[in-house]
Image 1 (cartoon, rainbow, N blue to C red):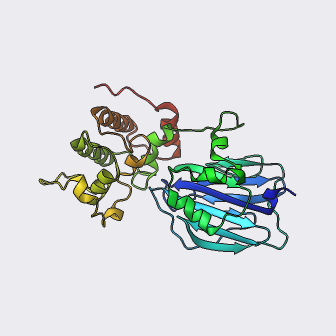
Image 2: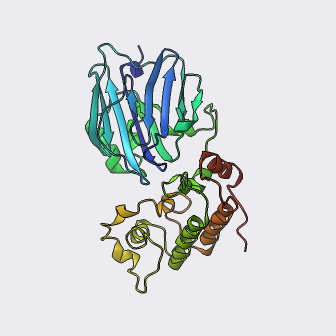
Image 3: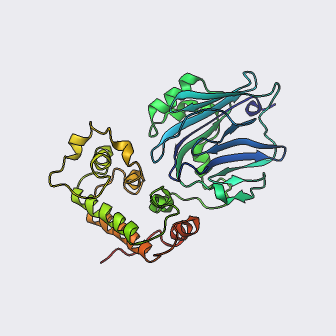
Length: 322
């Protein structure tokens, strides 16, 4: 019997960008003799490990990173779900239950109906993930908390190298056999269209003007870094896009963000890799204007999966000279 059959943990950082009512699939693992061995949704409505879902009442964060771990062992017969380092749910598995290591497949970003990877496209993932690791033992609560508290940019996982069965680096490696599309940048480019403000809305004049107004406002902060301070300022003071006569500085807003949840999606794109920790420059503003001018060409079209897929496939780059 392999160690993985006796115990397993699955941990990842996740940022869901699609409407929370939809279950975007972060990962599925099926084998020829078992189903939903691992199935995780971005809103955590699915938290399957070994046997059945893991009950909990946590609402997963939207438009910001959160950390999750699912752990289990045959000896404990307990699945445990952790959210941002805290245990939020448990479930009991059958006596003698093993983790299946039969022939199967792991899929990221898509729910597949069998171990042969027939996809169910209504459950596509539309967000970001990082550091998805599968470990061959049941992590302790202290280890899970340590992983979360160390942060997404830490190298905490290096302390667990002997326990990692399948690492994030292996999943991304060119040496790993993959099927389908792997995106490291173009998905971010159009990620905002999966937010509730836009997803399944019709491209029309008011929507386009709203987008233009946002980026004209962002241009007011030319030379400023797109950091937590600036995003907090925009969330607090610019849920609408009118520029007040007297603006509070981003630094003054850093410790006064109680209204942040009133418009969590409005500036979510600034948290993506294209913008976060980048300086606001004329090139950035021109790039943003170019995106929405392109979107205007689809006036009257619904912002659905088909349109977003078109943009991600055909419009990763475009000329922003004007």
